[in-house]
Amino acid sequence: MKHRTVANVMTPAETVVSVHPGTPYKEIVRLLTEHQISALPVLGDAGRVLGVVSEADLLPKESRSQLPPPARLAFTSREAQTRHKAEADTALELMTAPAITITAEEDVSEAARRLEMHRIKRLPVVDETGRLVGIVSRRDILRIFLRTDQELLDEARALLVDDFWILPEGWSARVENGTVHLTGGMDRRSTVRIAESAVRRIDGVVSVESELTYAEDDTQTKPGEDHPYRGIFSGHRHSR
Image (cartoon, rainbow, N blue to C red; front, side, top):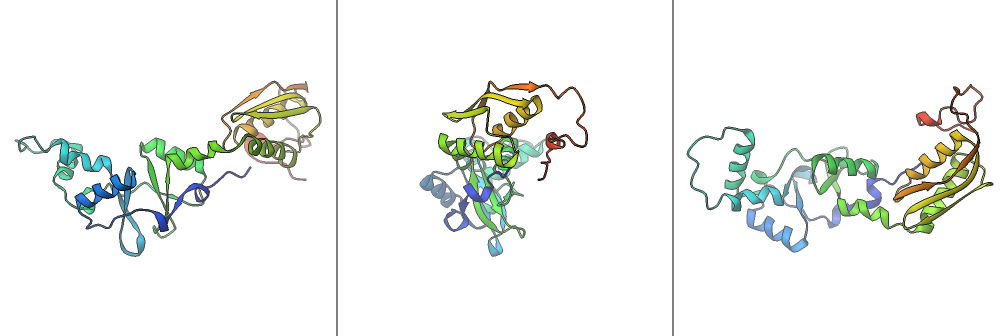
């Protein structure tokens, strides 16, 4: 199964709003506000990503503006970082580095995992030298779920018949609001499992509702060398 890559959904570098290390605080605020974005890549020589400056990096200046000067040294690295950013004036001083990045060839699902894991909203997309080639955001990834029901249905049918050689007779599929409904019967229980799992992994599918039945339960014995679906559950497809 071929998943969509970051290149399919990202904003290309030519239209990405960015800053350089010396960009002042006020200009960063203006760019974030004007373009209604949450973060900006900080680019160095040859367009390489040095870091990212976000709304969160800018907030300490305001949140600490009315506080008296600290009476003691910072006890934790987090407190020291907050104080530093409250006093910072340029993108180089404000940015978070190194930036969490991704390449254009990686799956959209991997971009989603990194955004979730690091609790960030945007990922710079870089090439092998670290040069910016685009930006991928949460919103870009969610656009996958705007695929039409007909697109999802066509891909599901092609996937099961052409990729997994599941004969089209005896079962049917329909899609409603991104949910794939599978009905009818297949020859083996393992085939049913393969069909349900494969359709669930299609980009843009919200969920799978299956009422598939099977004629033979072949999941209780270990598949032999001649089993037609041997190796599929480990991620390998059989060849013709």
